[in-house]
Length: 198
Image 1 (cartoon, rainbow, N blue to C red):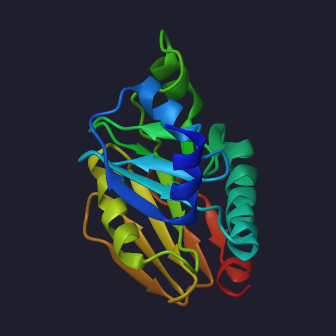
Image 2: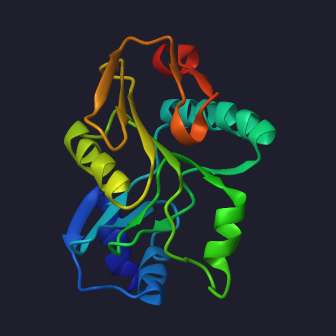
């Protein structure tokens, strides 16, 4: 891809388009054209290029990450933010706003692999920004579960809701002050005061 083409696409962000099946190297080469954007790739071959989030959403994401990382220090796991990408078993490459996973599982998964082993974190969070349409986020959450994620939270500051996804039907919490972890993150309690009220 030429620099001019990448600059034209950046003017249209967020952008989606269909691409042929991309290898790991091809995906990384494509994503390198957009150093300031987030690039995801769906199982059906749709490439999604998203602009950087606004500062307010960045503050909210930072608060989610801080609380999860503080809890994880005591629990002994690994936490990453939206700059990390995961390759899922269906071929999609996703970058949740926050993810937690067991360190031993990660070491085992990456053994013998260069960069992106097929790996699903135990827990993911997606945080809706003012520019996000809710539909694509709601579609993404069950995809996480189908690919091996055990628990997912969709936090929507616009509607002031948290939707909990696991192997059962989604559950919606309206105007919650906190949301309690379960399953892989039992014992984690996320305060939403600085996330829904900023």
